[in-house]
Amino acid sequence: MEDSTLWRQRSSAGLPYRTLEGASGSVNYDSGSITEKYLIVATDLLAWLNAGFPTITAPSGVIYYPEQPAIPGLGTLVPTNISFDAFDSSLPVDPFGADSGAPDGTYGKFMVLTVQYGNHPANGSQPDNNNPYTFLNISSNASGVFLNSPLEKGALWETIPGFSKPYSKIELPGGVVEFGESTVVDNQNIPHGVIEPQVEWTVTWPSIPFTYFRDILMPRLRARLGYVNSTPMQVLFYAPAETILFMSYSASASWTWKSGFVGEPPMSLSMKFIEKNFITTVGPAATGGATADLQVTHNHLYRPNIGYRRLKVNGNCMYATADMNTIWS
Image 1 (tube, helix red, strand yellow):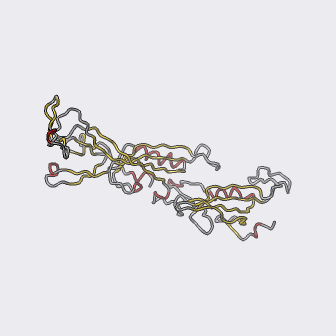
Image 2 (cartoon, rainbow, N blue to C red):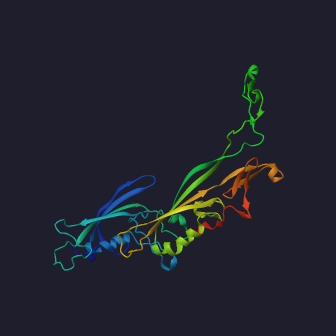
Image 3 (tube, rainbow, N blue to C red):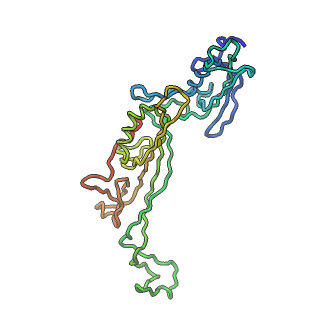
């Protein structure tokens, strides 16, 4: 085998290699998976692994996202899995120098690196601290809350269209019910449901440096839990103020094969937000004029016979507000 320093190809980290098998894989409308095989110097293996899956750091309290090497020529797919094996099956390999005193010829000099490339989480661009869409994963689930409200004043039983006149009345214990005309509801315990549409948002932040999570992120989470947003929330597609409630979060350690993380593993964070954000109509009695649209938020409650109103206790709204955008800024 020729001297590896004479090999023409170099990785983005400057490591020499030769292509053994070119691109093979599959691509569909949304995602792709491509595999290539390279011949590398065995002692370069760790450098290849560290370059393929670079460590996220937080120098001076600012998260730094190193760029992953993209598949040559395409740029939108990055390593998702790297496997390796000896090039010469008759010789073992010692890429990590575990047997430094072995005689020459004991171990093979070269390895085969199989790199599987997949979708870049930021669609081909390096994560940007000023653009949370490039490092956060966002999902949503729309549902609703069903309120049980006392029956509104002015509720009527409607007529039955086309009901035969001879059967337009029926005797009940409470009196005569007219089927041929609308009648006022005077029954007890008639259910009256009010539907409040809500959206549950899940925002996931993977691979957060431990010191950043402990010293910067945790104080931010504690200070905003149970609050609603004071300004439009960028990451949730600019949801208006007071429509997003920071409901809960969960965090876990992301154990890694990389060295230097003893007692300080990278962290993964999942945050739950509840959006209460819809439009209702307010009548002339409330506006002093024509009907108007009211945007309902977490600081609005349904008042029977009146509609949604802001509720204040001792001059304060039910939910205090905070700038949720500063959680990840």
